[in-house]
Image (tube, rainbow, N blue to C red; front, side, top):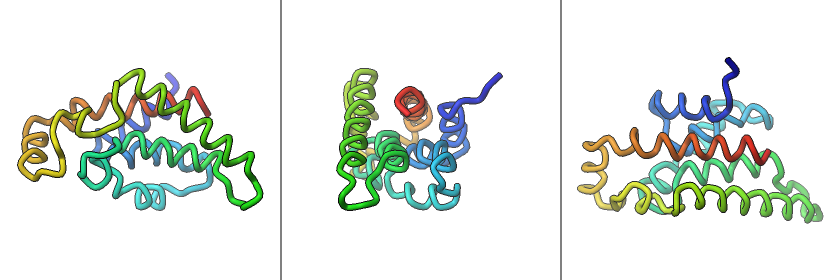
Length: 146
């Protein structure tokens, strides 16, 4: 049985890394980024960017992967910028189609910037039950687009 990048992301998430880290690291080595660097770069994006409940970490991790593949490195390379944005918009559209929001608070159902709500989400194991799907979705979408 072939292990997919979505499988890698899901396993990394299940093993305790954040949603953003799981998605980012599943693809990083394909684009010349070592595992440790990818984990560090994506660490603050979990929980809707540092548990603020904003954009889902699986989404921001996915956008990082798109940047790794297509991102502009020269000021005059507008084609790379256009390709990055085009792919990012396709990724976002498909994630929205599947999950109806990009916002962590909406997806989890709790305002993660509130310490009590964050504790309740943890107590209810929502990160393990709900976020695992978002991580797998992001991985699957990236596999299709890249």
